[in-house]
Amino acid sequence: MIKGFSTGAIAKGDFRTALEILRGTDTNAVELSALRESEIVELIANLDALDLRQFEYVSVHAPSKLTVMTERQLIAILLSVAKRGLPVIVHPDIIQEIPLWASLGKFLCIENMDKRKKSGRSMFDLSQLFNKLPEASFCFDIAHAAQVDPSMTEAYLMLTRLSGRLKEIHISSVNSQSIHESITRDSLTAFSEVARLIPRNIPIIFESPVQFNHITSELHKLSYLFGEDIPDKINPLYIRRHNNGDFKR
Image 1 (tube, rainbow, N blue to C red):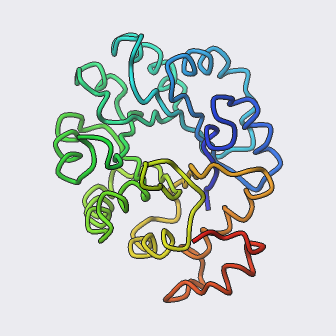
Image 2: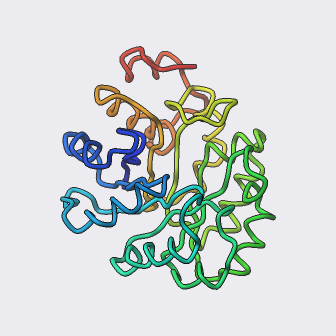
């Protein structure tokens, strides 16, 4: 399984420290997070010098909003990421000038949004955007989908109708303020409704903000979703035994 973390979850705003921490873990994927404009500038300036040999899969998360840069300026930077063959994860609400974003081609990877956003939350929203950007791929955030629609119907629609575009999975829990948290038992129960629809070769990126000593237990939660011994229902005793009792509800 291809699995890893967003650098922003491990060390917010500090990709170098996050990479150092992840080198001591059983991860083979990483998302280089640059959610703020200043971070993308620094990341790109240092990208070629980073030791990424541990990782089979590497992506870059673009800034979530623009306050200083124009779209054209950001795209000029992101094109240098695409030329390196790395997917660029993008929030759909910053996409305004379609032709500019189309220049990223297949390396543009659009993520479904949480309930705070006015667009990009539903299959309908995404289908309209993908119709305009036919080469773009899809980053499925399972926690966002569960928050927007706890029945997991939207999640089902996204995973079935956008299966040919699926490039990356984001996984975590999100609270009522849409803040990422370590994956809870309730989240796992919800996620299990659609886990069978996620191909095993799709990279899974954790956005759970965890300390180094909890990285392994967070990664192990994937076994409840994708392991051969997945129970029909999540067994709390099994969870506690494999997570040193630190599993949150």
